[in-house]
Length: 74
Image (cartoon, rainbow, N blue to C red; front, side, top):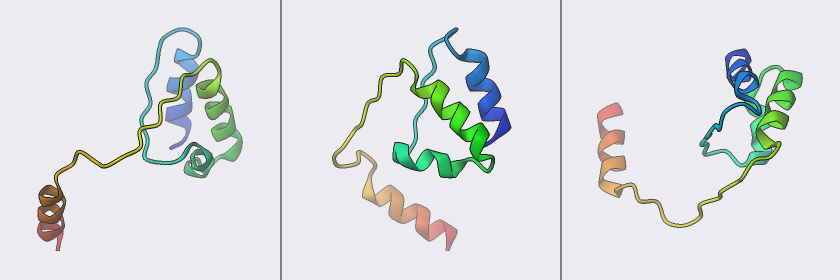
């Protein structure tokens, strides 16, 4: 993540709805940016007026699919 992500978020900030999905906990997002200042600015824009949905529970992904993907990589 970096400048391009910040540019998209900054352009849409308070103008358009934006949906972001991630498998990182929100506290880990800062580590995803090489430029910490730019990362903090991007996260601030995303969090301002945001709704946060956290989905917990068993994955709907098929275990067979995950196993076959590992076999094809090996």
